[in-house]
Image 1 (tube, rainbow, N blue to C red):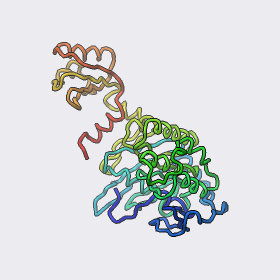
Image 2 (cartoon, rainbow, N blue to C red):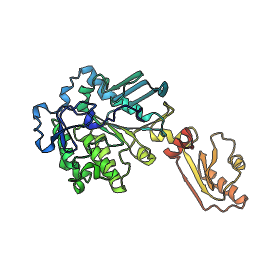
Image 3 (cartoon, rainbow, N blue to C red):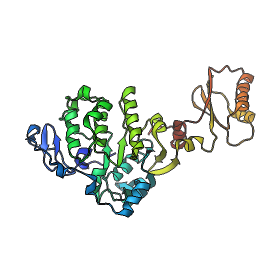
Length: 377
């Protein structure tokens, strides 16, 4: 959550060093905190000199930095950020590697957005260190902009520009951008190419913002809720593009509230709460956890006393049973055929006919709720 009075940044203002088109106008050499108050018509905007286009070579990289880039793309150590004396990020550590999707998960207000904004150079840390491709994202912002793509949850896009016109302008700022037509086809932008951003639906804006974030072939891309508001077809197109970026060696840092999105895409997951990292690992490592790899889910009469069920399953302390919502029970532990038979026998002894009994692994959502609680924030 942004502190009151701080400027609203967007990828157009913060990650591009060449001129900016906004509200059918053109801002020459817009500063990174530009308020988009421009006066020259878009049609009169001068052509961008290819020799001045943003290119990764503008960031001189030492052999040592290049070696570090290959191992760690984003490194956060002991990050602290305070607002009005309150630490919203409190000693947080996380790492993201090239060729991998790193998901940062947390409830509302957990500190994940502030953490990512520090990585993007939109906020300055009050303590700890942040390095992106071996560089300080605030002090070395100019050198990093050609190499980092940013997609904010609110889009951060100028609203008076036509969708495809905006994307072509952004692409022209880079020395070797992706094909705009190919990206537009992949993400289905042609259907609203001539529509201004302000008239797009939420999901359509997200697709334009994603295209703008990746058109410059970044080495690191930060995606904040990339498929929010999208229909299933659009989500699949976005996920396919994310997988392609990963295969190309791009480091992808993903924040999302969609647990299925994180489970499907992430190579590594960091769970954040109250400004601290509370769990980290692959999806398999987190879902296996300490309570065993198996889950039995039961739908039956509400209010059953589960104490006897744990006794029936035996003395293994890894067993756990709960009723997360009325009439829905979860039993986690070393589930096998014998354990499943014990569960169904326990139900039969009490004359309970279950509407459904299913087995499977604990889900990432199960782990998330176990760690962060079920209360609304």
